[in-house]
Image (cartoon, rainbow, N blue to C red; front, side, top):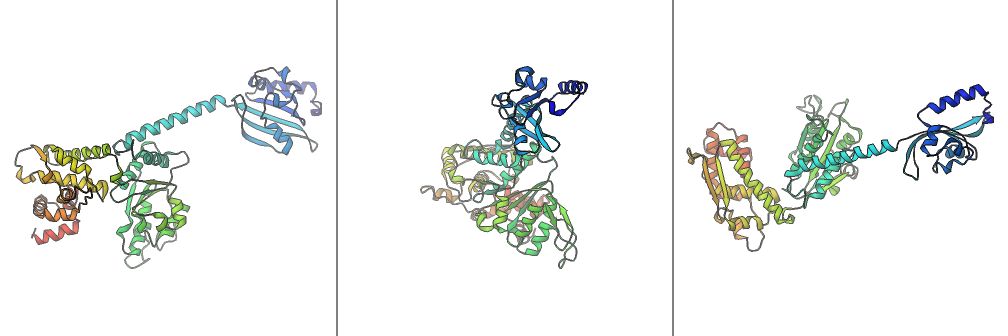
Length: 472
């Protein structure tokens, strides 16, 4: 170190200081030979200071960053270097310049092998936690360990990856469970701390809007006077801030794709007619029965399709999964009767009826399967007002209780159940139910919700029409 031109006392002081610091220190000349080293560096190399001096740095540190300093004549900071023996170091390396000339290089470094191992253990524990959390959250999603295993894995990655969460697309036929999956993803994100417990889940059915002005104001919000009847209103995107925005029937997005793309890219929303940009932080989940790549702007599709999850139709599900769904919906019916009316129902299906239900084909998938099960149990069950005080009842569902189309088309396995025709053929029972709920003080919307739970697909305005017709 003659070129450093230090007097003896200064050299001793500096040496004592450098030997005391927690980091390793190497000083090399322009050829890469070690001219100074401290005790920590020798310990890291499992040798002695005397053994290292005047030897080439690569004998002890084959990937030494200090050589890059000499070659490229610039400093390198916070470099991660891995030795062939598996040790990991964080290195800061600097050129030693005397009177404008490079005389060598200095490396100050710390062994982070244990820290890296600890970090790996933490990551593994986090992954196990995510797996455990997902198995709990998605446990009720029948098929999560079978036909939907890959779908669930992608759903977890979309929400739980360290670089995420990511926007995603859910594809599948009507009734395959896209909305249910979106809600499970939302619950999972809250469960692992990606979203706060009070985070919002805002569901937009993009197909419900026929007027583009109304659609834009509902989704993006509006400023008073921006169009006839407009008021100061925060839109659904603002309401979804710090949570999930679920775009159902996303293929129906037509007039405001550019606006949505801008929100996703800039994380800001501007109300219709306004000038102020409002920051928003949202996870977008888009669902559709159609190919969104063909229905959305390419840029918007690319933003949303960071993860694309495809839900299989009911007919592609395994028999065991269909059995689990069958039992799930049967138990749900029983629980609903117990919770709402304190009726303890024991529901049994004759083997023939059960097999017909499980072997049928359902064009509208899981939703239709559920509706058919509910309808079949309804057909075998007396109405509430005829049960009097009998709170316990055994229900036996036979083939005759299954919708007629299932029975008629059972031979060719081409079963198509039209819920509207079922409701029509059972109009007398439907009217009795409407009358019963009306007498309990229910309005049209609440009656419609109760009928939906029983598998009867009537909208609230259809209920209103029937109430007027029935003079109720």
